[in-house]
Image 1 (cartoon, rainbow, N blue to C red):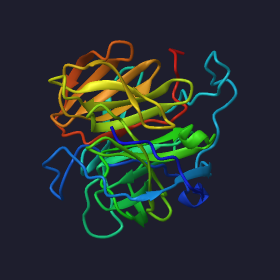
Image 2: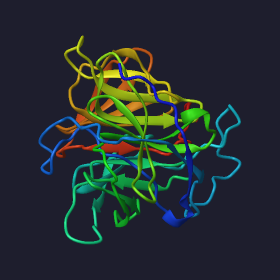
Image 3: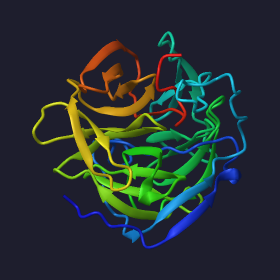
Image 4: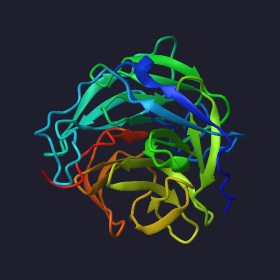
Length: 300
């Protein structure tokens, strides 16, 4: 287990410049062709980059859109999944999947390795070397920054990192590292690790009052394992084996984790046992997924 290294500095990131997009990260792919399922821990700088503003591109939900815990929930939002080239939207009610469109890159071609959404439903995404803001209605990407070290196969906005109340964009690596990313500059800061020889299989998801979850490779299990994660340190606790491999995208809705595999399987994963159930197989290779951090924690 890598020793947790608490941060020596806080870097505030004003996401209003991001507009109507949110952040995500690259999951279990390695190399420019995405043929592998690992990532490297190359970030060396300590630090947490706290998002003090969640962006101005999306209006807050109405006061009637509430969970019973009195936290306003984005019940009108969707779950998103993607391949390297295409963004999809999933209706969390009937579980139907629709194609938003091919990613529109600002220049040349790239591969989206993961996405994440903040509490306002704004989306960002990462490739192997860049961070983008993403228009979730059109899949058009705007370059935010190049990476300053690190290759990440899991990404999500997480609150409570380093004891901070704000949200931090977190990237996970194939060897289990837990890193803070600055979406404006691409700087990377080490926070901690999963421990127990666990490595990121493909993604992380945080939901306010719902927990932080990840899919990992674990030496004691033959298929991917669902874990809960301590946001402050990155330490993972095993929930259970999913029964499926290469779960490179995870999201959450109403007390269930949604899983998306590299072979095109769409899963529902039990957050108490970790057991996955196949919803159906799609004609796609899923490389990541994301949902707003204010997704409902109960059925509404």
